[in-house]
Length: 114
Image 1 (cartoon, rainbow, N blue to C red):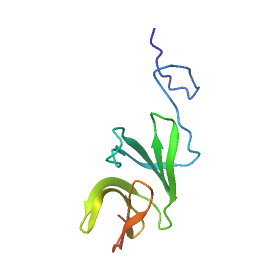
Image 2 (tube, rainbow, N blue to C red):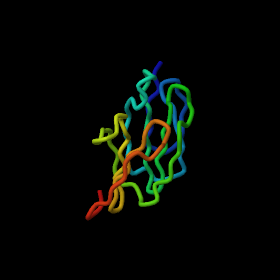
Image 3 (tube, helix red, strand yellow):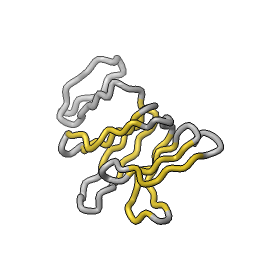
């Protein structure tokens, strides 16, 4: 028997749903494969100040990176001169690109919020 979600705000138990509490306001979500050696996708959760990379299958944090210029949006991409695929975080007048181990591989300033 399937359980249905309730809009009451009350938690419910179900084997079909899993919850992750970040204790932060979520402003951006992205999911994708950033590590070419891993078949699983990673869930990227952006708050105003941090980027959390979360492995849903293993219920484990991959990294939690502080974005000092703030975070407004997320996306995947490549940039010239960097062979690896990056998670791109747009912030307050900056764009930051991180690789699979949270190493900052790209950063630039913008004229406005990204």
